[in-house]
Length: 424
Image (cartoon, rainbow, N blue to C red; front, side, top):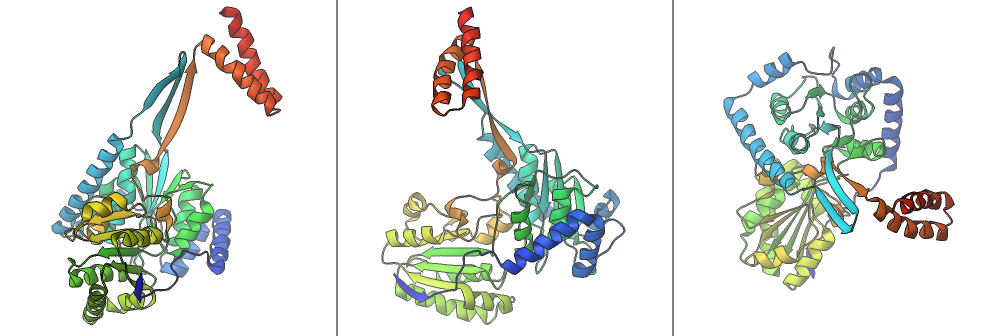
């Protein structure tokens, strides 16, 4: 492996200062409720409305401000997300099996009761994130979805975000950002029942709040800065590869962009293209910082090494600009979402194609996938038995319990063996 450009350390690390700040805020928010929410909202967002929740009339007013094309395009994107979520749910079937005579075992998929969806704002009003958590939750059968999104500082809500939240199916909409939003949904604060699962992307403080609230409620996943990896062979177009790398670099100065080439000339050509395109990129100020700090270009000696490099990196988004697409599809294992061929790109997955964009980062793709309809379902098991089967299982169970010295457990089995043996 040759390194043409090597980026910085990309693992998501807990920052002690962020941990302390979020911990103190959550304690304050739990103790003082909406008063603390208002205090923080005023401080950080210059936002202190009479009520943080939007009324139906305010939602209608926000949507009325939008061009018809924005509404149509949002509906198109949401329809794709909904269709994919419905297809995913169709694969999740209940199960009943009889491993031995008289023993019936099964599982069911039950939706959680309530979900809190966070739709980020910050540098970019990412209203497309609304459908990525709300729609899969609703398709799963979740009865209550509360959505929180930060205001545009000093101005209020972003109309396209409100439209996306509403049409995705949220039951309640709150204009609150950051840690206070997560606290409101997790604690309830007298304005709602606490949610069972928190979902959605956000900045380092939102991610840390989710980490600290886990256990109080469930979370979708912990995500750090966004990232992309591209695997490219000599059939790839360097200009297109560079374009896609920079497409992710504009997110944040901490965004990761990595390229694995199969030849050094291609790597050098892609590097030159990145530098050329940075000169005119509208968001070059952020993208240049990101590329300088976190951009990587590696040259693999073979397809096998390219796969090994990618699986070790475990990228959030992985693009394949290669001729032998089937080889990589069959051998790659660690990624959040895979984009096969130059015809597709990360932006499609982020906005409009239908797969989810809330994905694992910082090598978490080694052990989890992204948000999907199954994130909002609990797979629960059940069992039924005949009296004769209870005797058979109970005799074995009682002996196992005594080996473990759990005598009260053994007695619960003994009682049934005696009861049902007498009826046999």
